[in-house]
Image (cartoon, rainbow, N blue to C red; front, side, top):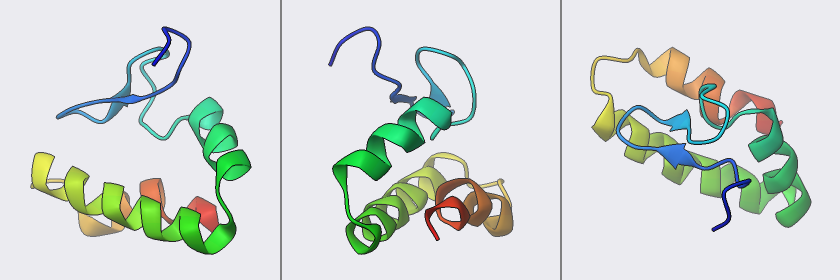
Length: 72
């Protein structure tokens, strides 16, 4: 990991670099470039489940929008 990598800070799941909700735009671009559409959706579903455990009061629809909707 380098300082420039846009990775989540847990338990908030905000980006460690820019502070935006993760996955931020730079993280999304990197993830799209590294994974095919199906693999990306599965990976993001795993992140959604982890985030749901870290942020139990966040509505499921918000988590879906944040972690999965953009992968379509």
